[in-house]
Length: 225
Picture 1 (tube, one colour):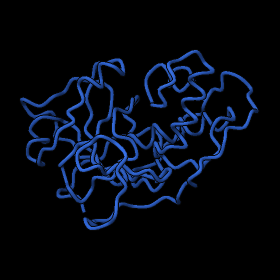
Picture 2 (cartoon, helix red, strand yellow):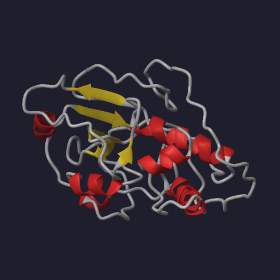
Picture 3 (cartoon, one colour):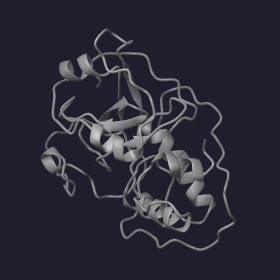
């Protein structure tokens, strides 16, 4: 359970298992009619799940984040819950849009307790198995906010728009990639390996840097903004 009940961000589209009010989902605008299949991920996507407090569960770490808790299983759904600190004085409120490279440089890849995060960032959300903070148009993992919720499929920035939570942005990306024939998995709202491979293939074919991440150029190319 989240430590304190707080208002939930207004989302433009409800994610799988989302408890916030649903609004009409943005439809993807395919750039081209592509029918080529994208190779099926070796690890099948799991069904949507809700994070549980279970500190002792076995986690496979493949990233370079503290504790090595990045999951390599494919896309798990997120249930976004928001902690909005209401713009208290001294909090980071910068929502100007950085490039992905700038966002990586700004990423506070550090462990801090809840008090530190709440003192320094205005919006912190629980999505699926981990907390995220928002800064400069991106969502980032908030390491240490709650050690019981530190399961991230991707340890890095996720571009956002229209006040969408991280999983809601990924749902839209997955729908768009699926319509274009790049993504063959379930629409789960999780940036797992299958989604990242589909993103990289689309980016390469579209003349974008094939990073396999959700950045502003990719979201624009997919017609989501």
